[in-house]
Length: 329
Image 1 (cartoon, one colour):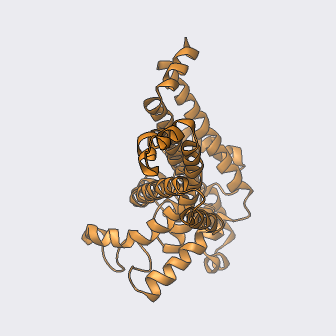
Image 2: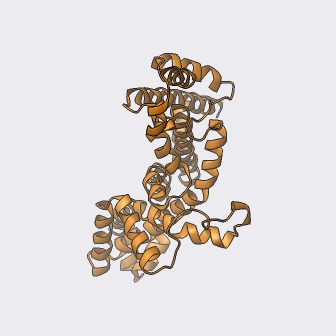
């Protein structure tokens, strides 16, 4: 266990270093001028060359990439992630605020996509070749080919603009302070973004679960149970669900990266103040410190999800614990 823990810590630290270097390199290669992007075109026209040079020096816009990264890394190891150019606040505070804003949305979408995808996959696999199976597969194929931003716009037009069932955006009512908003109002603003974000992850989970369910239902023990007179759903409940649990956990936790990535476009369409919208804002503004902080936060979320899946593997399948113990021995 100690060797496993040390290995995971080393992997996590290496991953964070690689992500931070890559993010700084991409921002440096971007044609966006952070001074112009964060002061505006009108201010740039009336700004003196001396003032612009002062801002560029303060934000490190004219420094080489490795100098800026070295300065940032030396402060980051002490807990100082720098200051956001866009929000004029410490990066750690901005990231913490946006993580808190996205937490409910990401968790809701993640749970919905896992439950719906697994349920649809089991139904399609158990009813293989029938009309229900064909409908579910067609639905999943259409979802796989549908861009997340287009689906978000469609949901917004139908359910918010035409039907008026949900707000057109934001996480709280317009003109209201977040402290005065009730939980019911927050959930009302959350429904459409969460549904849209969850739909983007349903197809992959459903199709993979269906294939595994088909393998289970065509196995020898399932056929033997059917020959004894057990119905399809009895066979699935007694013999199939246990075998589907392991791949379901794999798919569910591997979908965290898709949910986090999809939130960038979904939050932008719904003007939902979370990690995704802040990432777009930081990218368009050339805000390297904030963009690195957001990249590290999302990387940590994905890493923790994959680590949780690995730990749950041993709980679900004791054979994996035996193999790990044998390899270590």
